Length: 215
Image (cartoon, rainbow, N blue to C red):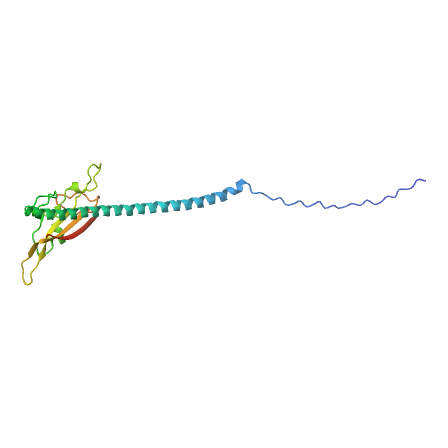
């Protein structure tokens, strides 16, 4: 008698599938372009500010250097005028005493002003007017020969006055004729040549003064 196969009840097993790992999304180049643009704009702004600051500093330095140059040139012109007029006064007085000429100059005794109770150099009308009492140096004395462009347009000037002596109780102005006050002024290269009316110059201007005693 064949054995009866025992029929076991079918069982169903429930298997839970494994959980999939989360997918990490990597940022590709398309996600980084926005950040690079912002950084580039910030760097561009910083570089622009530095460039503007450098240009301003360079312009300020150039302006200061230009002002120093014009002042130095005006000082040199005034120094030339002062030394020339000092030597010219000595030469003029020596020529009046019969001594041979030793210093070439166009200055003469007519350029020495007569004694006055007030210094004429303090009155600007004696400088800047058609009746100017100043002695004007030749322009060739300040402009170097052989240069393509001239440095100065207006030559320096000087004024020579006897040193006045006021005796006590006297109203007359006397002069020793041996002491002189020499006032010189020089102009920068930006000052234009004197007009026909000798109007007030515009630009850098340097004044110098000295006193000489003739023995």
